[in-house]
Length: 127
Picture 1 (tube, rainbow, N blue to C red):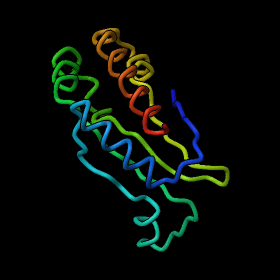
Picture 2: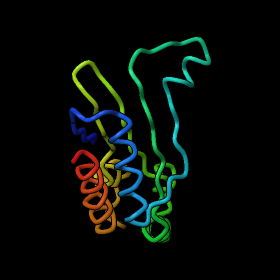
Picture 3: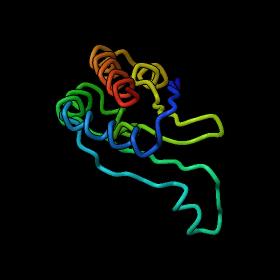
Picture 4: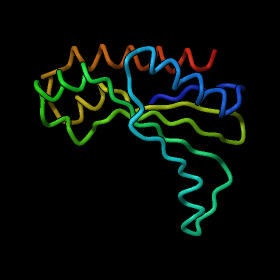
């Protein structure tokens, strides 16, 4: 259900690349959560940095919600950029696997198209 790519690039470089590429593909960043900072503010320090980016492509969102309103709890799409001991990572939950988890093929083609686009964006962010 989850796909993860690793790079030797800095977290900041991957974040900046991804956000630029997402904008070029008509995705809006609805939110960016710095989980390491949120946890620290609550007294729960973690060493690694975790950014969760919430994305929306209005065209795909409109199509998916029209065809399959049950998908709404899974929106907006999320991509995470984070560090671990061995590098920087970017990951997401695959839209096609989300469709499988709700047991519906209604909107499957759109999920496949979105998945291809999101994976391409993630890979480009690492180059």
